[in-house]
Amino acid sequence: MNVGDFIESLEESFDDIEPGTLKPETKYRDTDEWSSMHALIVIALADTDYDVTITGDDLKSCTTIQDLFELIKSRQ
Image (cartoon, rainbow, N blue to C red):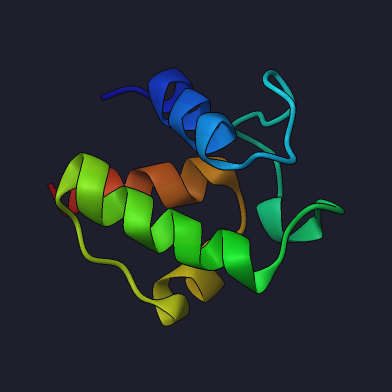
């Protein structure tokens, strides 16, 4: 897994985010599209695609897409 593939998976999971919008340095909670529904989608994506369990607190501890990627990668 690399960060590009991870971002692509995120963008595919979020219907309201156009492909190419997210970058590793994107502060995902600061995007206009971010909502609690997106948090649930990220948690489900980590579980189904990467077999990793993350929590809401884990999401709060991350700032950027890269942080989130590193968290999931560290738990594989």
